Image (cartoon, rainbow, N blue to C red; front, side):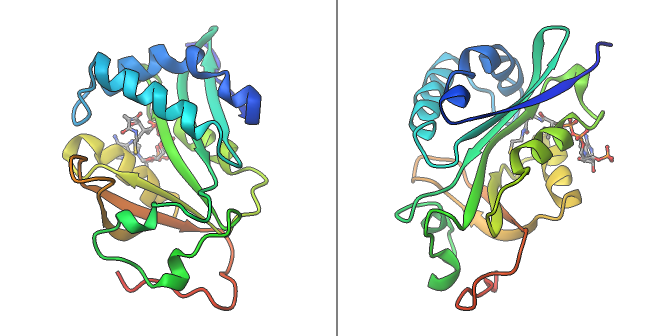
Length: 193
Ligand SMILES: CC(C)(COP(=O)(O)OP(=O)(O)OC[C@H]1O[C@@H](n2cnc3c(N)ncnc32)[C@H](O)[C@@H]1OP(=O)(O)O)[C@@H](O)C(=O)NCCC(=O)NCCS
């Protein structure tokens, strides 16, 4: 199997990676529990364009033999983010407070089946976080058995569970997890969830 190279893209260069990783996205997210079809893919592309305008937007691509075999991306949620409001059990206000610098939200992390269990996601995750000055990293993951590898990965990298999260009444319920990178500011409090 070809050697896997991981590359990171920030800002405008990151926004231009969609076409490169979309075939991998399609292939991966047709799997359960996601079962995404053409409408979902179009919705994703629209959301990606919105996220591409956010501060700290960063994409990591894993490439082997000229093909994208895995990808991940994220950004820093702005002060008016709805991210913490999606938690079904809201955390303390001081914990949820954002100043645009405090948190990096990982939105996607995915690896094509033949390249799994070879540390590709671990490398993509490390590339996304490299050099970040944020206090914490947050993400959501599906609770179904099909997402067990993702939950196991996040747990092995030190994420802890915050509670259930639903980004809209028609959206699935996710499990929200957070990875602390450095101590919170003096007024930040840890959630009790
Ligand atoms: C989750 C996913 C990205 C992991 O990718 P990967 O490249 O196989 O992950 P890694 O090889 O870096 O594994 C990192 C750790 O995760 C855990 N892990 C990964 N897959 C696992 C599995 N099938 N069973 C148990 N633990 C698993 C292990 O702790 C592993 O470390 P180890 O191999 O040293 O034991 C991949 O399975 C995937 O793309 N799934 C479909 C998309 C998805 O669910 N994305 C997450 C959306 S939130």
